[in-house]
Length: 67
Image (cartoon, rainbow, N blue to C red; front, side, top):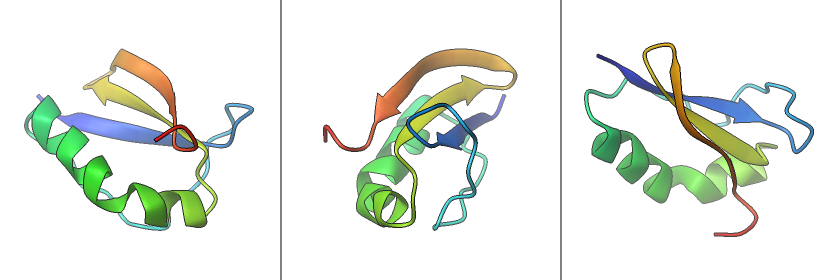
């Protein structure tokens, strides 16, 4: 199983992240990574995130402007 993020503008359009993500082996690892880089992501034009486990949407969109 792989946990990945989708990076979006506020209208849901996918955008490339300013910080290159990886595939995470746990949800906690994926969330910890966001906790470390969310400011760089936001500064790079990402407004919100969606978390997936393989192809299954787990939650989101989660705004980076409300952190």
